[in-house]
Length: 143
Image (cartoon, rainbow, N blue to C red; front, side, top):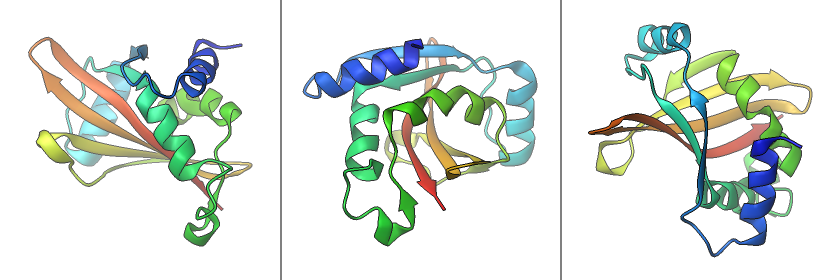
């Protein structure tokens, strides 16, 4: 079982604990250059992170138990879909700049077509004094 899947299972068990976070690597330089060229967003040396809050948000809004997902044309996200995060982020079909969020965060959407559908991961770019982070916000799957 991967580090990400263990974290997802722990986050679901302790849904009240929103402060937990893991990192899953620094964005490769070649990919940071591609993202900057296609979106204008600079993410060089960004640390990618996943929080328990984002895991629970994903299941609540886009998971298999959400009754409204079909109305939005979505397929329910399962625990095992989180295993695909690195593949989707490292080998997306397309990266676009999303809607900027509160507090000046820039959003990036990574989309990749896989067997289950078109996976989209939304990451927020957070600039801090100690560097740049890319926080996983959510993931959804459309047919």
